[in-house]
Structure formats: C-alpha cells, structure tokens
Image (cartoon, rainbow, N blue to C red; front, top):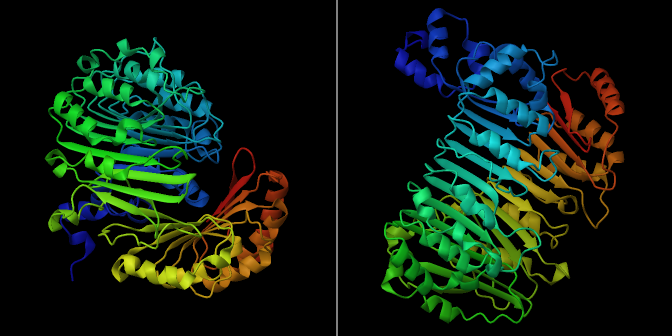
Length: 601
C-alpha cells in the first residue's frame, strides 16, 4: 500500500490544493521539511468573513496567518460584526501582531471586502501595495461612506490594480479631479448615473471588460434628453479602444441616449444589454440597424427586457414586437417573449434572446402568452439555451387569464425555486391540480436537482408547502415563514433553514421549535428573521440543547424591537454555557446596532 509520504511531489501538490488553509497548517505543517516546503509552495485563499465561525477565526489568527503570510494571494474580510475593523487596529485584540497583518495586506493580489466601515476602508487601501483585484460590497444598512468620490480617487491611483468590482448601494458621482487609471482592464460597477458614464470611461483607457448598471440621477426618472450633454459621448471610442466586452443594464433611461453611446463603441465583440422598461428597446428592427451600422465586430449579443408593471393605458402588441425580430439576422440570436396579464392594471412582459444570460427568471405556471421568432430550434443547440438559469421565481394569482402551462424546457443547472402567492383567499387555489401540473412541466430528474426553496410570503395555501416538498427529495436549504411550519413531511437532507417570524398569524416560539426538531433532524445552519427580542432566550435555550448538529445560528430582530443589550446578553450567554456544559468554542458576535447576533462554533 502506497503511503502519503511516498507520493511524488507533483501528486502531493495536487492533493494539497483541495485542502483548506486551516487543515494544511494545523494538520500537516511541521511534520517534516518536505511537507513544509510543499505547503509553502501553495498560493492560499483566506476567508476571514462571516462564513468562518468565530472559533475558527481565532484559530486562523493563532495558527495559520503568521506561517502562511508569504503565500496569501486572496484575502476576504467583512465588517458586519467588526472583524475587518479589528484586523486593521494596531492593538492586541486579536492573536497576531499588527506588523504581520500589514505584511499580509502588502502581499495579497486579490482583496474582497464585505460591508466595510469608512475608517476600515480607508485604512486597508493604504496597506495594499501589490493589489491586482479588489471587490467591495457595501449594503444599504452599512455605516459606511457615501463619499464614493474619495474611494474612487484612492482606487484609481493604484498602479497595479487590474480588476475592480464595486457593489454599491448608492451611485457615485465622477469628479473632474479623479485621475485616470492606466492599469484597469476589467470593471464591474452596480451603480452609476448615466450622466457620469462617459466621464468614467474616459478615465480607463485600457479597459477591456465592463459590467455596469446605469440610471438617471435621483428625482430625474423622466427622460431629460434636452438637458443631457451628448458632447461627452462624442468620440468616446477613441478613449476606450480596447473595450470589447460590455454588459450594460439600464433603469429608466431613454433609448436615444443608449443608441448614441453604442454608436461610439465599434470595437465591441460582446454586448449583453438589459432594461427594466420596454420603451424602444423591444424593437428588433432598431437593434438590427444599430448592430449592422455601428457594431461591425459584434460576435455575441444578448438582450433581456423585464418590465414588471406596464401602465394600464399602454398597448402591448405581441405580434408587432415579435415580427420586428423576424428577419434572418435574428436566427443566430432567437427571441422569446413571455407576457402575463392578470388584470388591466397588472401586466408584465419579459423579452430575451437565447441562450438566456440571466441566472434567475420570474415566471408563471399558468397564463403566460409566449411568442417566438423561430418555431423550430436546432435540438443540439436548444439544450444549452437555459444552461445559465439557476433560479425560477414562481408567482401565482387566484384567477390566471388562462390555464396554459409553462412550456417544458431543458434546465441543466436549475437548483432553486421561489414561490409567491398573491393571496386574497388561500382556499381558492386548487393545490392538487397545481402540483400535478407542476410535475408535467418539470421532469423527475429536474426536480431531483432542486436544492433550495424560498417561500417569502407571510401565508400560503393549506398543505401547499408540505405537498411541494414531497416532490423535491434533495432539498438542502429552505426559507419559510413561521406560519407555514406545520408540515407533514421530514427533510433529512436539509442543513440550512431560515424562518421568518414576520407573520400576520400569531406564532409561538416553542411550537415553531418543536416543528423544527421534528421535520429537520440534521439542521446545521439556522437563521431566524424578524424575531421579537423577548423571544431570544427561549429560542437559544432550545436550539443549543436540542439540535445536536447545529454549528451556526443567526438571529435578526424585528424593526419594533430593534436591539438587545449586548452586555446583559453576554453575561447570560456565558452563564448558560457553564451551566449546560457547552464548549468555549461556542461564541457570539454582534453587529454595530445590536439587532443581529451571530452564534457559531
């Protein structure tokens, strides 16, 4: 029998790539010189974010970061519970000296920051001198800077930065004094005013790939074309000669602005375009003209239009729309229209080219009117049309306009369903018929691949949740309202459960906990949302005693009782651990507002 230490170096190196950094240094480090040498040859990706338990975080500080400091190429930090702030403080709160932390930051090539506070963000950018990739995500509730101009100035001064991803809650405004970045080649930006798009591009002369979402300035949802400075766009292509891949999503922006913008980008080889309004974007003849006249190098094109609320007086002529895509030009990019009408004031339309590039799609089991510009697809190519689709979001109405079923399609990578019922009278839905039809649309093999289900409504028709779950044997993650927890099925494979207590029906914590223990025996990750503060001690006492496989518990309080006294809770928690023999590995963290607590071990 071959022993591990007798394997050749090449094979050992390959095996080590599959191991977690913690396992490398805790289990294999310092066993012998050869293994140490091979471990030191591994580039490491270190995640110190929320997915790492507080106990393991401390072990990383103690045993991993210092010996691995020369190998860390990717580092992820989060400030949701103050971890990033602590990492950047020059004190002894964490068990790794500050000079080592600064050294690690100076060596990393890729940095991922989640909800950084203003001070943390400013500090970390001072230390990353060799960075090539930065991804920053700032949510709505983060106490962070809205001065994105300052952030941009710092980022654009970094000479080694090649790839930048900014997921910002609010849009930036480009100042004239922001320097050009000659190193940036790849950028993703989730919030940008259309008025600033040209200014931004003029500062990235070597950009090759741009994914961006644009909208009008606040209080400017109207199409103010008369006030738009088109001179900023003139000659823009000369400033970005290498831009070949553009993914552009627009919100409430006139087609005229986008057309003038695209006319400048003749070098594009790939264009992915989406809009939340139809306007002139749904005219195939117009797109054909733009592509033929201004985008001669285009090889890949994707169009996705999703207007959720069409005004009552808006006339939608599906035949006219699809006929505009009927020329042979569109044979390489087939077009599908999905149109749903519940009432005169509730109309929605989705138009997309195939293969669809979106990862999730809103849909209806009944009542969709579908138009296609090509009746027969090549069967080999058709298999890939919905490959990128990972999630379907179902909406049910009491009285659909027809009983026409969603067409059967090939879903190779579908893993997630969400369900929403626009309920007036829950008993009006014929649940058994719905589930029978559901099985007609989706094969057994497709249903067996579904791993995640999300129920976001406060209430669902009686027995719908239980009966649906019986059709999905391999569910591992579930989001469910507390009012729907009266189930008649057990889910032994489910490891992640989210329970939303925001319900119009009164729910008792003890009853909910009994349901969880009965139906989810192997739960590992448990999330409670919209919890009343007075219920927290009942929830914790039960969960920590009864759920033997539980390793993570997250509790978010409701808005009316928005916080808990941190000091009082910690005293109770430490006493509870002592009295019940819980390991010291079980630790708690709080967010700044004390309305989210995180317990992990």
